[in-house]
Length: 134
Image (tube, rainbow, N blue to C red; front, side):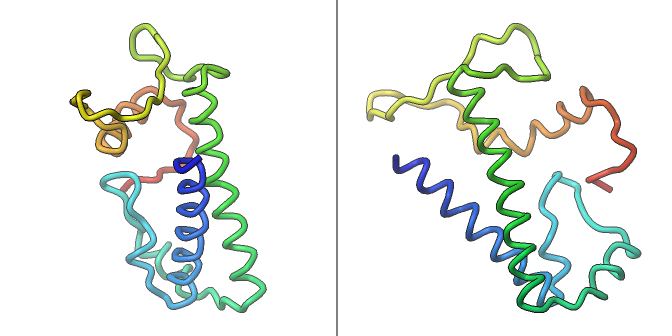
């Protein structure tokens, strides 16, 4: 339960931080994904034109939180074995989350590997006609 509750907290906090950054024109803080991500000058200009009122800020938080929750839900389905990854590197043998015990030394942590695997994903995906990275 602690993991799931923490995920919900992170979703809410991050959606709120991003909405606050948009409201306060902190455009440079909006992008940390993918690893070489960023906004073009024209994208920055358009974002800086947004006038964020309380209703729009509320809607943005909801949209950002919903999108993030969808990603976590899909990930948890893969971990639970109720879905398979859509991009495979070799044979998929499933994963399992277990309570960490002191005698288990973890060589690789999922969160440590997450951003680096973006490049693997980019090579495998069908190009959507737009870019997240620069």
